[in-house]
Image (cartoon, rainbow, N blue to C red; front, side):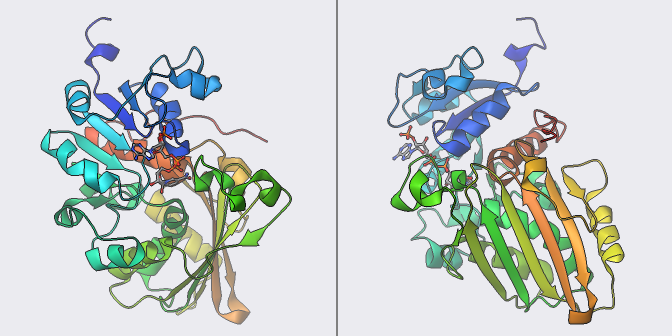
Amino acid sequence: MTAGGKEEMPKVAVVGATGYAGAELVRILAGHPGVRLVCLTSRRHVGADFAAIYPSMKNVVDLKCQAYDPGVLARKADVVFTALPHKLPMQFVPELLEKGLKVIDLSADFRFRDVETYVGAYQQHACPGLLEEAVYGLSEIYADRISKARLVGNPGCYPTSILLPLIPVLRKGWIDPRTLVADSKSGVSGAGATATPATHYCRVNESFKAYKVAAHRHQPEITEVLRREAGCEVKLTFVPHLTPMTRGMESTIYADLTAPVDALQVTECLREAYGDDGFVRICGSRPPDTLDVRGTNYCDIGVVADGPNGKLILMSAIDNLVKGAAGQAVQNMNIMLGLEQSAGLESVPFPV
Ligand SMILES: NC(=O)c1ccc[n+]([C@@H]2O[C@H](COP(=O)([O-])OP(=O)(O)OC[C@H]3O[C@@H](n4cnc5c(N)ncnc54)[C@H](OP(=O)(O)O)[C@@H]3O)[C@@H](O)[C@H]2O)c1
């Protein structure tokens, strides 16, 4: 390899590479033009070829899974993605930071600024001091802070799909932040690679149901960010649903209008916030479709103003594994490393 080739590029590792979010990171990073994927870890598959676990990766990824070892990671890598169940990253991340690594954590462990909110939704925090330093990785909104961060808490999939449409409109003061309702639907990969009775094929196929109604752990995460953005009390009713899709997430969000704005003005406000050439695509009154963002880092947003009822309706579609997890994590890495935000994420969407 010549100078300026892959050998010279920043090196990255994925901890928890065998899970659905980790494997999606491997997929994206394997095709990234500006970094080199050097290390994958697993707990159960140490020594196994990654391509033996995910056969689609045959002749694409030739790495073997290794046991988690912070010393090895520090010797081999510059950036580490932790794609582990919550509770584990907060035990691993302090040492990775001490060893000089940049870390992007996909779990909930570093998404909260207020430790009590984290404790209320999850469990005691092992390193609450790091919550102040960690940057919430909603790429389009917090790019400035992400660019200076050594630790990013990558947002949850539902929060990404709800915050991107809401924040610009909330900043304008056009909706009442005490009247928010988010009705969201997720594909089954959102629950991770291990099937449970509730996510077994026979319970999911040809089925559609709400779950954790007004009791999902992403609710406090969303509310904490919205409260910061609105600068006042926020009330959000959040109802997630499970749909018989592998990947994809749609959120329909309702809010009371506080100003006489129409859908065109809201569309313009979102275009101003996100531009025309980034990962957030504004669809106007056309309801976005999960099919159009499958496998991509796009978040498509539609807008309808239900004037007679005084409601604004925002709709968003993302791929939960890409913009909702691995894609946004790579976008955050690009920002942290000063690369093009879109590097490695420019896959062309499927037409059908
Ligand atoms: N799925 C999504 O759509 C999505 C979206 C946003 C965020 N996330 C977040 O991403 C993280 C991973 O989610 P996932 O859906 O990919 O979960 P998953 O499919 O269950 O994968 C979990 C990964 O963690 C590893 N692991 C589990 N326990 C471990 C331990 N004690 N020590 C070391 N490694 C261990 C597993 O390794 P082995 O099985 O190889 O042992 C596996 O690679 C979670 O925090 C989740 O909240 C997921």
